[in-house]
Image 1 (cartoon, helix red, strand yellow):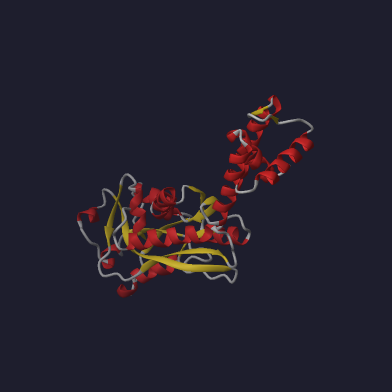
Image 2: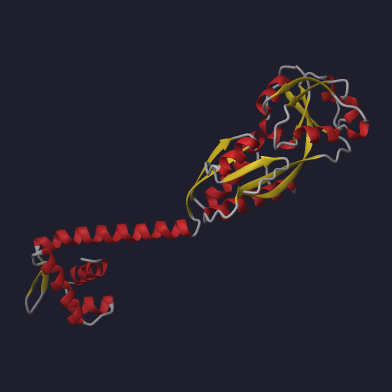
Length: 302
């Protein structure tokens, strides 16, 4: 029994006429009849009652109709799914992302893919830069969304965005009355920073903000992550300089103000394994790149 025989059988079952069925499947009647006989011999029973006036299904033939339709429908669905995976229209792909991008860039990318590629499931996990590099090389995720400059011979890395820094202030800090802040005016403020980690240049970028002053801010606390940093700012412990995308969080008791005449930027990059042939990878890379470009030009909501 094969798919061809099942298609021939269904054509006869639905037409109840061997001549019309042969025309429908595009073969001559004798080979069609031969295929039906071969199927009946394999099953050990007649599927049709034939006489000079008409063709009808036997009880076994009626049961075979249900099974043949189910088998052919399942085969068609399987073929469609395989083609969808081949073409990057269906499947599961994993992303590791740093804190702020999960609230800003990643939601926009997921919305885009839900509209353009509804068959793709994206699994997102918050990770530091170092964790992402490890997860990529260990094949635990497929794409990383990183901050700062990263180099690794096993990874392809593409810069997709450069965003300005802003100042995060306790909502009751007098500086919230200023529309724009100079780095000089921030020097007396108690500063909270994220601890420098391997593969991250956050500390270097913060130093760039104060380069023109010739001085460094007074750091009162170093924390491990941006969650804690924003929490301490909200508690009034100090101020911080953060990427502009953090403003998308809209945390309570925290205000954000832009910096005047500061050229320092935080770089967002994406990374994936060299030689990764997944058909989903180009789809995700394109979505990340395009949403980052739109955001950078102010065309996409934060």
